[in-house]
Image (cartoon, rainbow, N blue to C red; front, side):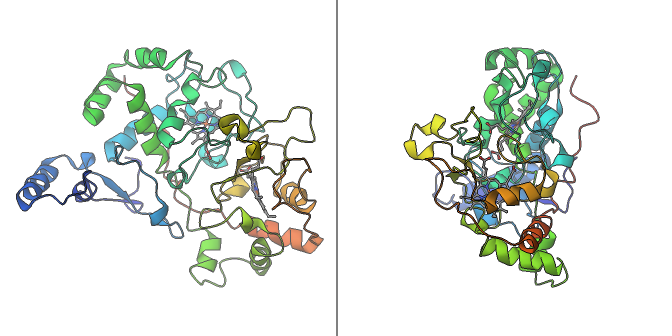
Length: 362
Ligand code: HEC
Ligand code: HEC
């Protein structure tokens, strides 16, 4: 199994705690359920994620109808890495979301099936556990919805529709059995989404040197220059106006001006909401593992963190819809250097256990 015992602990009783309906079960019903839970294989019980240091348990987003279980996560892992989950067996989620690049592809914009390129860069897809809206423009309201989107994207997995995907996966008896075990059904689009979403919720990043310094009080965890960078991050450089909280994001959408200096502006969030205020706005991404996930921004325009900091320092790119939180910063060269030193202390742990399966269902 992929998940290290340290990272997740089994909690069978969570099954009853999270039971929908609200009313506490009667003693007799409670007794029956406990007996049932104890008799069920441990892999069917609800998993309680043990979060790396620095991550906030109260911010976890897991829909009540898709509790985490060991078997579901494992099914999701198989699907995430399986290239048969594409029209012509060439693309898996993992083709564009690779562990060593903070689950991005390390490219400005992604290339999917037949080498076709999309218009956006793959964002660091970790700590998804803490977000409701997914994608740069937040068009998927849940991770379940996100998890089946790429399958029917003509430049990603390339299926014409979800029925075509389901028909193809149903030809693999090994998957039919796993879906039966996990969901009690045959392969369904909904099941694919629930399993992949569950797997994605186990890709975490916390316990970075910055966490150990800031929350753990370990004075030596980060260098003096990174300490100055952290101070700037919160004050003069104004980064926490948007990259706020433990996951370094306000989960909101802002127009910094990315793309407004070209003749192909991506309207971002506006395409989802049709709200004028959202023109050119994109979701504030987490900054955890940021030094692994270059190039940066939704169009992948910056190769280095130094370029990113210079962009903010000049006040982004002016346009009629720019967020008023973005203003020129007048940072000195030393301050820019310190800020980048801080950004480099945000690499942590919680994803290193993720490995590609050595074999797939037949
Ligand atoms: C061809 C490359 C490619 C493939 C294949 C692909 N993705 Fe992505 N992924 C991207 C790009 C590019 C984006 C950004 C698109 C956007 O936001 O509009 C993205 C966005 C995401 C996000 C949003 C992260 C966030 O911070 O909002 C998640 C999660 C994700 N992908 C998971 C998956 C899963 C699961 C699969 C397989 C079902 C998958 N991706 C397949 C390229 C790819
Ligand atoms: C007004 C809100 C806001 C402020 C202030 C802000 N950011 Fe951002 N940040 C964003 C948004 C939104 C994006 C994505 C923009 C896009 O691609 O169009 C982003 C993207 C980034 C990225 C690229 C992430 C990736 O995965 O590609 C980095 C790095 C970054 N910001 C660092 C900083 C730093 C350092 C500061 C302070 C100097 C800062 N940000 C200030 C909202 C903000």
